[in-house]
Image (tube, rainbow, N blue to C red; front, top):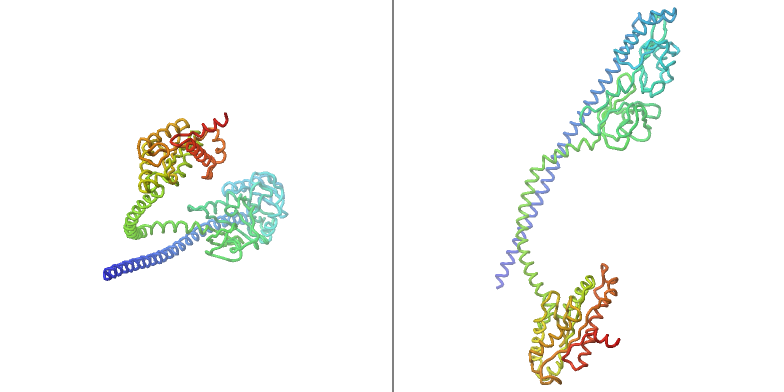
Length: 549
């Protein structure tokens, strides 16, 4: 016997060791898989990072070339005017002799320059900055009489250097749009006579070179920035600022943004924060001949969102297959465990069901016990109160049962109680009706949906049924066979109002006063039946009516 037990124990240890080894192997494989996936992801993210940096740098360089070309074209136009001696001579004749033919030749040249080169306005100004002629042929500029203060310094620089000079972008001052100007000094042979002022709308000439972004992106944007004292001045506002052209500025000491780093000398690709503290990948390139810097940036979250999504999809298949394999193995083990658990659960439920039934059945008579009567009475009374329906209780006592036990002995007394209970059970047929042994030789019968009249009829039927058993009872003081006394009580309609407020709300207590009153009334009626000589039925309501009358 000990050998068999030892063999079973060794077999159990072997199975547990094998299970632990399998679990350890699976854990090692999972760790290896996680490490391999991490390495693959890091490598691919590194490649994607460099690809995104190259793409951002390429776009920045394309925009930079376009900006330089735009600037060179404007300066080239101004340079051609400086070298045009005929235009300078015509300007001198018109100024000195009021030659109308010369004025018409100058205005025609200015108009052709405006139309062919897409300038917004073209003016001739003297050395003091006063406007004398426009491309429309007017003797002065339409609404513009003098070069604004923001442009005056660039005009003086052009006149002193005798070379074309491009101004900084200027917000709306004398024009209804943000503009930039180029001044071309004009000479009559060696004598300085003024300058041609070429004006361009930034929204038409410059902004389209950096907006929109050439590739699909939700967060990428290029901005032209330059230093203006303690401010970083923006040509076009950063994403999300909601500001017009030349209306946005950022204090240099407020944060280490990409624009601030670019103005402090950062060049090429770098990582920083934007004006709203979003992590960005940025490229900064200076614009030749100016103090402007072209800053192109895209949010890091958008850059790596695509690679993470693609890598996740690419790795889904092998990971899914491996997880499916592990799931199959684990599922097989769990299925066997579930089957064993199911068998044990069913056996336990059968045992618990039988035990539960035994806890609510009187072991001697086979009818309900006191616990089952109390539970059923609470439930049925709740239904009666909610539905405003009657409910009755019969309290039954076997007459002179102690004398029966003393005369015939306890085995005969037990058999007597069994027969009486079977007689009661034979007459209880409707749903919810219940016969139970209340204690000793006392029984209780629950009669839901029965009023006092129906309960009295049922009680009399049970009295007759017990009497018809003809169980001998030589020690009885009355008839020579076993009889019963019955007390009947019924829930009255006026009793419902007493319980409705207290017990129809959620969480109502199970110990109802009305239920106690109902059983007490039945007990009072039973006591009265015994007082009247036993072997009879007494209705509690009849007792109340007799007292009232």
